[in-house]
Image (cartoon, rainbow, N blue to C red):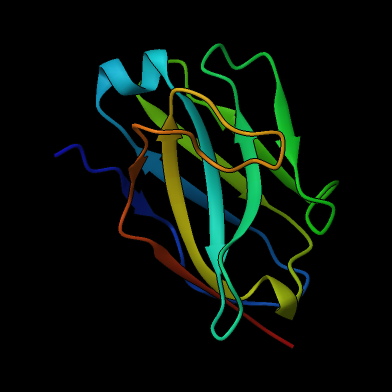
Length: 124
């Protein structure tokens, strides 16, 4: 089973910045669209951002637009999520996902893969 590996989550103060990383197998990174989701109990998992496998298009939820930046590394099979101006509402477990395609709402289609998640906590 393919496993994506997230890293970079930590405790940060409001207004700070953080970079999350997602390492993926080479063939997955090259041929799959990728995305980040987050979940903060008791709420349901929500879409954060996604990027096409070519890296030519990115999409963001309204809550993070203008503050988060998604990118695909060129030298290694790694997806980055650069988070700036963090607020307490960003506190959640962040999950990386890779899929052949995503719906208009940002949900992954069949054949997707997930990471184990990384905790981001933003203090006020």
